[in-house]
Image 1 (cartoon, rainbow, N blue to C red):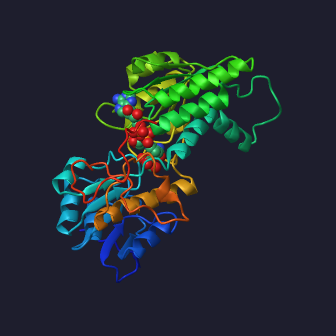
Image 2 (tube, rainbow, N blue to C red):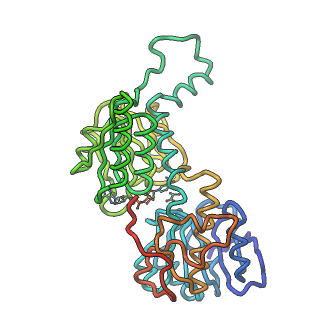
Image 3 (cartoon, rainbow, N blue to C red):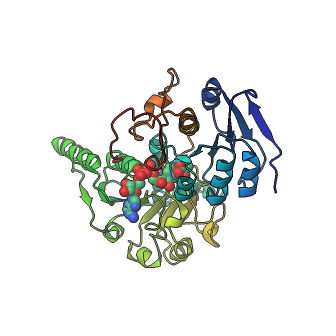
Length: 394
Ligand SMILES: NC(=O)c1ccc[n+]([C@@H]2O[C@H](COP(=O)([O-])OP(=O)(O)OC[C@H]3O[C@@H](n4cnc5c(N)ncnc54)[C@H](O)[C@@H]3O)[C@@H](O)[C@H]2O)c1
Ligand SMILES: O=C(O)[C@H](O)CO
């Protein structure tokens, strides 16, 4: 069994043992745990992706809760090990939890936490950045400049797409998809078409009100449309950004056939999860359609890219950094730690995981609650909800 070698220990005499599989930004999350009598162990091993065996060794014989990462495979084996060690809670330091087998956690009565809300705007901003970078060919132009190829202004040099007046398509208009849509509509005066299983009422109201404002000021109003199918979005939009959860319904949502229905000069952005796109089909499409551009934060087999992708000039690729702002990453660490702490202490679950701000206020004690537990209906919790549960519409 692989044994992690390097551990940092905080508050060695703490009553509850909480393990974090990675060092996480900031110290507030550590302090909050220590103040509540936790011994905090942080794995500092120089290995980016820990194996199941590594994590079993970290859990050891006695462990009350674990904070883990989206790169880890939290299934039957790990939840059984955590349960044997007396564990009650696991939290991903991520909003997405497709790496977690929630049914296995339910079987062992282990609460599963995630970190919604705190990364909404940060992730949407990266999606907007990729959209802009692809539209205006910023990465290609930067490489050209650094290669010393610029020898003067030319009418045809790196001509790209104007976003104003074009249509932005959003697939998955939840928290992040809606935040991205607002940025593109308000920032670039784009019209919106979106597809989601649910109606994004607040988003629709926002676009309507902004359109009225523009019209009142003598400008062309922006418009919105809720598409009845994803294919409608793919056919009509000039820039399409993917923001659904990854599950069976969204695996390879973008495949060869669907790519073929998109405009030849469309821009596709993915800041959700890599497997939402069939990456092999995408590489082929990029080769056949040089004016089609993509901005990718996530990949089908991270950390790898499918063959050919890195050579494509019409692809911008960044290493899963969409949530990487200091405030957000520190907030994610705090929410993950409080999810685990809340379950250990028997606190209730916060009623509305879309409103996690009270947990993020550095100048006040956080509420005595777990901010976001995804299997709360199944796991038994003591106490009652602090605020009325509300649907997770953005
Ligand atoms: N790249 C990154 O670093 C990064 C950062 C944050 C989140 N994410 C990913 O983004 C996802 C979305 O996060 P969120 O906070 O907006 O979640 P959310 O739950 O608010 O939004 C997801 C939306 O997807 C919709 N959806 C589900 N299945 C669908 C389908 N088949 N077709 C269309 N829409 C569908 C849901 O109805 C929901 O509105 C996360 O699950 C995560 O995987 C990635
Ligand atoms: O799901 C998430 O939270 C991201 O992928 C990492 O921030």
